[in-house]
Image (cartoon, rainbow, N blue to C red):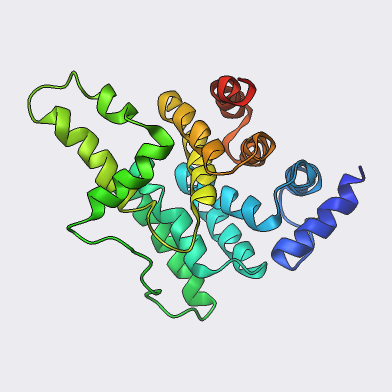
Length: 251
């Protein structure tokens, strides 16, 4: 593998430019970074540029590393990812990271969209109503996760035993996983990456690894997605995620 050549080719594909030479205040560090990410990691595994960039956008949203997030939003647009697909990738992080961090990322993508002449707001992608968001969420949830959420919350006092799993079904699944622009396979893979990037969500991570398999992702694609996320979330979180995924991927 000629990672210097690979880096030049991949960097050009994604950003339309050339990787760092001797310019800037820290060219040595940037060469290490770029040659590793774009010369090695991006050539390991089967995922295409589009999915790799949506994975990167997911991790950068979770980590709130917004300068790099903006650069990779631009890369997504450069390789033909639709604005709606980028937006949906960010939106569906909300159940995992909360609304404030998601709003930060939304503000950042809107800056990039505006700079690229993309009219805002984008077209609606919602498919649920106030009256059916729970039912549609449940219809997606049960085939993939079964009754796990309800069972885990059975010990809660009084109304919370119903309210908490109800929130997870209507909000976590119904409000987001039913939306257009991304399919179920893509959403589950990106959810798996988001949970890996959090680093402390083993219970949900195991569930979403199983969900990723059930929605059509291969074992290789799941491992590839986690490895693609590694330069942006660090090796410890990769190893922790692989440990969590091991049972589901080897069983």
